[in-house]
Structures are given as structure tokens and as C-alpha cells.
Length: 488
Image 1 (cartoon, helix red, strand yellow):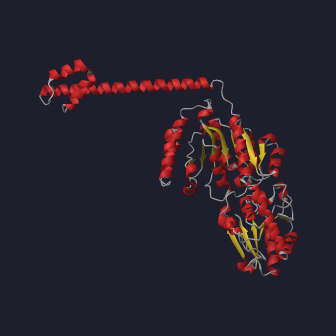
Image 2 (cartoon, rainbow, N blue to C red; image 1 turned 180 degrees about the horizontal axis):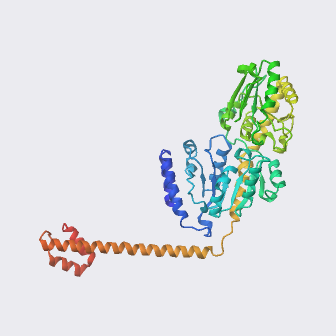
Image 3 (spheres, rainbow, N blue to C red; image 1 turned 90 degrees about the vertical axis):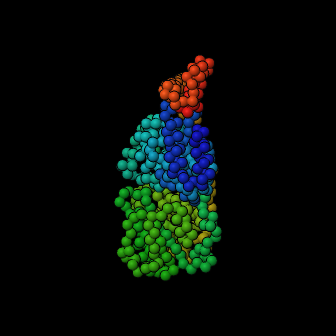
């Protein structure tokens, strides 16, 4: 471990310019360390937790805060993810413990493995089971979860049957109810930590911004965020948005529209809107937070008639949360109280029915009352800021992991096996010392033989009598050194 500490410190000293090379050294050191242990060795000598992530943490998104919180809470921990020089420079004292995983990292070194997404859990499950380590994972649409999807249900049931499955974290009661009612997980295995925020938003985005009817803003900006936790093949209610936008654009010249989401779009029927509608495609939480400073309303819809989770829980979750943090009003067709009971319709979000007339009517109402729209946006911002506090988001996760790590059962023969391994290591060290000594003796005899040949040929300054005297009085080593000094 001392070698690892030196590598970490030198990596920071070089401003992380050689992070790839240092990461290779770290991986090799941990592989060597892992080779010394088996799954029944006393785990006190191992890592508290290994976090597995599948993307780079970016300042302002949830992952950034989660990685930082875990690395600070568990000094004996690592994160397996793609390395990022910017994160390294902002958190140099912990960033070197983010290691690029080559799928050869010894997971058995951990007391607990914490996996960030369902997709990554499915991918790494066989590897985790081979390591024999308890694991917990996060289940939300951002990481690949879809309601009422047979393939997803099968994957979840496979995970639940693993003897090393220790729990799952979900962002809402609706997802908890789904997995419990469908007998995928038992109630005691599911931990609900409501919503996910941006714990470290960009400071420049926190400055007051002009909104519809306030400051110098003379237009109402409505952003439709594609709902992604729908059955494969559905369009996230884009059709509903198009109908509503079509009606509003014809009546009001000062309403503009924005579309965010990874789905096929069509201008059919709304060509006349022209430059008053813009499509952004798929954007991450940070870019959407930047975009949301100009938005007045963020519209998130559910699929009609299906028991899907609230709009706040879709893959658009990070985007919607980020927009609420900065004052855009959330309009959703689902009851946001399912995410957090403190959400109240008309106070900190606006609920719209899955109906074009209702969507149009609600937007028109707040178009005519900018003060009410601003109040809803500010109410949502205050609540999301409260939900996003580290002690509400990261502390529960850390305590869950700590409880699992504390409850790791040690084999009855662990200490005995550890002693056997220590004895074996001592024996191997002694054997290695004997081999080194044998090689040295061989070298000494070689020097003497070569020296003797040179003495016989008269090419040495050392006389035979002197060599014999040294050999008798001081031993083989001294004689060999004398031969070396003589120029042999």
C-alpha cells in the first residue's frame, strides 16, 4: 500500500499530466495486492468500497457529488471510471483514486461494491460474483431502467437471485412499488432516496436571471423534455407537445419552443413556427442547466394510460432537476408528490393532464400571469435545493454502504488462513534469500576460476600465494573481492 500512496502523491505533483501512466501503475499494484488474498481472508486489510461508474464526473451533475462524497467518506476506497483531468485538478487529494478499469481490477479487495447504474450492474454481475463480494446498485431510468419491459424485469430478477446482492437504491416510491409488487425485490432490500439534484451547480447559473414578464425578457420560453422511461418505441409524447405548440404558436407570437431529447423529431404541421422552435437533441445535465437559464417552463409528459413513473423520474431527471434549481417552472403530467411529498400542485410545480387542451390551458394561464409563474418556479427551486443537500442525497447512500460493509461475515478460518499465508510468505522470502546467496557463491567461484586462469597466464597483479593466504584467512568472499580488485 505504501507504493500505491507514493504513486498517488507523485501523480498529483505532476498536475495529473501522466494520469494514464499512473493509472496503469495503480492497476498493477492493486492486481499484485489482490493476488495475495482470497475471498475468505480477513477483510480488514482490504478496501472499504469500490464504486463502479460508466461515465466521467462533470462539475455540477449528481455523479460529481457522489464520487466526491464517497471518496471523502471512505479513505480506503477507489472509483472505477474513466479518468478526467479537470476533476483531478479540482480535487487532487482524492482524484487519484479514480482508476480506469481494464476489467482486471481485483474486486475481491472490496468489502462492498457499489454500482451506479442498472446497465453497468448487468455487465459486471458475473465479475462481481466471481469476486464473491456483496454489491448494491442504483436503479433509475438514467441508468437503463424502463417500466413494464420484460427484458429489464428478467435482468432485475437475475440480479435479485445473486447470493451477493445486498440492496438497491431507487429515486421514488413508484419504482419501489413496482419492483416490490412484481416480486423482483423484497421491501427490505429497496432503499428510497427521493430524486437527485445538482449538488454543486455552476455558480454563474445561480445569478438572478430574467423571466417572462420580469426584467427585460419579452417572450415566454417553453422547453419540452422527452420522457425516456417509456416502453421501447414510444416517442415520449412528442406528438402531444407538437399539437399544443401548434395551437399556442398560432395564437401568440411571443411564445418560443425548445425540444430536448434523443428521439426522432418532425417539423410536420409546425413548419410555420420557423425560428421560434429549436431542437437540441440529447444533452447532459450540465448543458441543460445552462440552457435552462433562458427557460420559463419545462414540460415533461408521461405516456398515456400507462402506470409509468412521474415525469421527474425519466431519463430527463437530471435535466428537469437542473432546470428547477435555476427557477424554471416544472409542468408535468404526473404527480410530483410521488417523488417527494412536499411537491404541491400550483405551489412548486404545475400538474397537467395527458390532454392537449389542458396543456394549452395551463400554459395560457401562466402566460397571462407572469408573477404566478415566477412564484411556481421559485418554489420548485427552493424545494429542489433542499432535496439536493448532500446530507439528504449522499449521507444515506454512505450509511447504507457502511452498514453492509460492517455486516460482512468473516470466515471462521480466516485468521488461521491469514497466518498460513503469512508463514508461506516468510518461507518464500527465506527461499528467495537462499537462492540469492547461492547465486552470489556461484559468482564468487566464477571470479576465482577466472582469476586462477589469469594468474597462471601471468596477466594478473595478484600472486597465487597471496590469493591462497586471503582465502584461508578471510574466506571465499574476500578472495573474490581481491580477484576483482586485481583487475580480473
